Amino acid sequence: MDYRVVKFIKNLREEHPRIGKEKIKPLLDKHCELNGIKTVSESTVGNILKRHKFFHQPDVSGKIYHNPNSKWAERSGERTTSPKRIGEVSEKKKGYYYHYK
Image 1 (cartoon, rainbow, N blue to C red):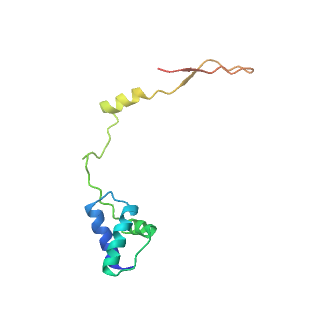
Image 2: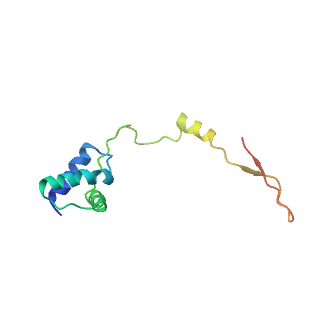
Image 3: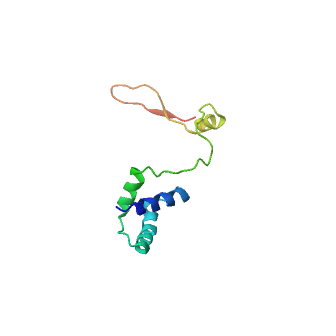
């Protein structure tokens, strides 16, 4: 594989960190055609991304840690309700009653 292919993918991912192998492939094909380089498949582009660890996602939110004691976490816990079993189970009949808050 030509080093120019890897260099092109690296530069493209630095400029557009969230672009995937599906969108890189057509751009790479044009680049290879212009420079007389043998093209590579889409799966090879994915392998290059993994092998060279071209994951350049900028920290947009600035948030690294989620605080489970935050007000947002407390509110989201109230929204999710799970059914609770209330009642007795007898040999003949099982009485399942669900109570939602």
